[in-house]
Length: 165
Image 1 (cartoon, rainbow, N blue to C red):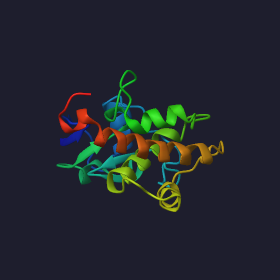
Image 2 (image 1 turned 90 degrees about the horizontal axis):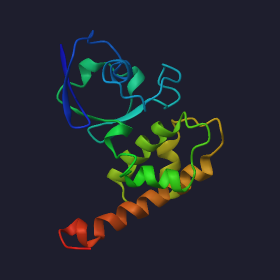
Image 3 (image 1 turned 120 degrees about the vertical axis):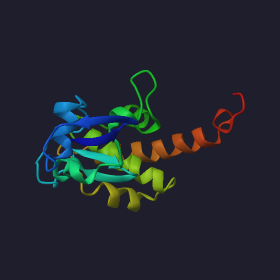
Image 4 (image 1 turned 180 degrees about the vertical axis):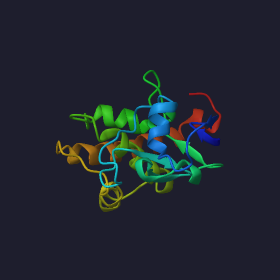
């Protein structure tokens, strides 16, 4: 039995400790944003955040995650209240087929948590492990820049500092 904390909730998982996190997320917890792409950690469609770092869930066994915080795309926002990264990707229409986008958003979110104002070169370097075959790279880059602005605005708004809007 492995205890996982996913999107702020504790879960007891009855699975082999070597089971990849991706399978537990999709099969046991019914969190389907992270996708199975290659199963080898080479495409990035399965990217989630573990303790602030982008992690390839298809090659990360659950035994390494006990006591750590796992965040999936579902943990960032909702349809009614999307997180800044989600909103930015929608506003920039950064998805074409959509298969890679959850992984791209999670990798971008991890970057923006570490670096609120990344350069284009830093964004490209961070997203480099994630593949997009549809060629929406320029829209994805614009979406990450927009998300950085949205997050900056949210952090400096009166409501973010406890005041009224």
